[in-house]
Amino acid sequence: MKLLKNKIALVTGGSRGIGAAIVRRFAEQGANVAFTYRSSAASAEALATELSALGVQVKAYASDAASFSEAEALINTVVADFGGLHILVNNAGITADTLMLRMSEEQWDKVIDTNLKSVFNLSKHAIRPLMKAGGGSIINLSSIVGITGNAGQANYAASKAGIIGFSKSMAKEMGSRNIRCNVIAPGFIETDMTDALDEKTREAYLSGIPLKRFGKGEEVADACVFLASDLSSYVSGQTLTVCGALHT
Image (tube, rainbow, N blue to C red; front, side, top):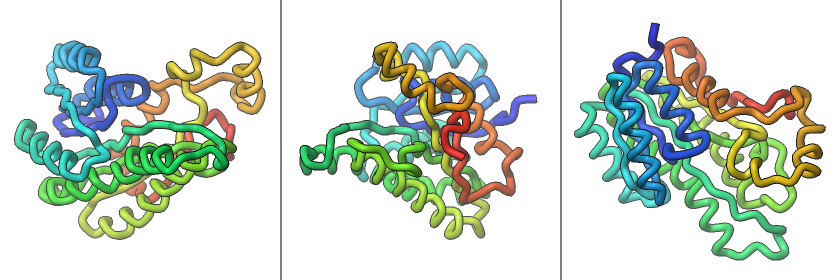
């Protein structure tokens, strides 16, 4: 049984890493998937072509989630191309790490706009299509750092903590319209960033994780499938940590 059969999903930042894993899992579970990218056009188109072979509609869109007008245009285009919207995954995000003493206004604004304002932009414009569909699921990707904080990441932590507060408010506001809103807060996940760590640094991070390994993008994607599907029909306003018990 495909858990997302005939559902229409939009995933931001879906061309690589965790985003690409979510797009893949959704397509495997029967969803028609639209996803966005900023600069990796070749990999985005390759992913769309590959997954279309599963018999679902998959299409990549170049879009800047931090732009209010581009977010509006994206939602309108996706609804026109796919015929509606049932699931929104706000995954797009960046880092610009430095200590507060050295952090520039530009570094602050860029992270807040890309990570937090983007969630407002897409959610704002997705509400009407979700209402028209009779309800749906919004899933926002935060981070363990948004819960615990982390030195050198004040901008990133603020953006990810803001996502949690925003999502709780959305869940209360939109529940009467059968729109659920939840958060996934990953811990250390295998990405290009973790691949670049030296062995000593990797071991230091791993020592704090009770499961003694980094997570996989597919494991975050599986959590997204749960929150997107009817298996979580009475789950809203919650933050699901996918972190190997790093934070409990």
